[in-house]
Length: 207
Image (cartoon, rainbow, N blue to C red; front, side):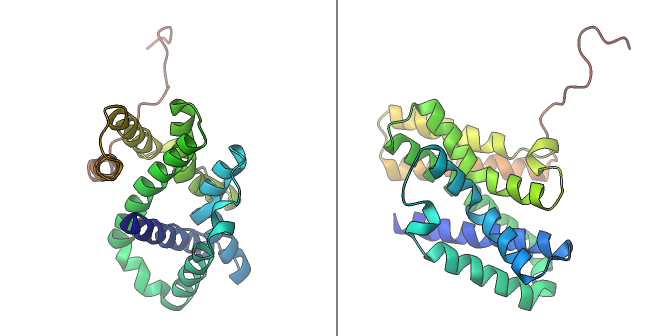
């Protein structure tokens, strides 16, 4: 589990930097950037814990999350011009974080004896709602509502995890395989500009 925890911290760092960059582009001051980075990095997990009444809340029980967010904000302020060209690297960490956050949230839901479907939703909330809160607070339409396959990748990976868990696979192998599914779907969707269909016309719309 040490590897999973490391990936969790890397994902937190990448999420926090993405939040800091968005806030910086909106000309927020240092405090504003810190708040947006914080919400982006741990907002999803915090919302999950509130919904399932899990205590302590994720970042309260482990201060490493706060230090990671602080390090991300400082890094953004000192090296923003150097970070922007590293978008592919940050995307890689962001995608890793997406997979890890999804499955950790799913596992936590199962630990609290939630129905697998509810646990799956908790996993998705863990992974994507930090970004949703970030976009709302910075007056943007949340990314997952208008383009890119993002939350759907989380659901696919979560379903894979539940299926393999039902079949009795070892938890570590199950985790890695399901995270790889999320990672692969996200990469393919971005590379080929894949999107979910949108509701524009119905069966009765005249052409």
